[in-house]
Length: 93
Image 1 (tube, one colour):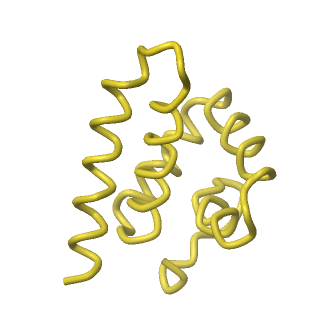
Image 2 (spheres, one colour):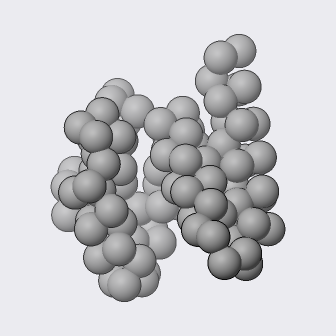
């Protein structure tokens, strides 16, 4: 039940962040990032989608690597689980 609620919150943050993204203040980017991390942490399918996107778009991969280096350790580990250069560990998600 907890994972389901966190997935819903992640989707809501992604949706709201994409709407707020057009504002001059970067709250939308923060909301999108928080929603993405919640989804990656609670859904293997979402982690696989992000991993495929990182393979397909190298610029997206570089931006996630750069952002990951600035995150706290716990959030960095969640984001690093989608790194295409690492072997995926399904048990860690």
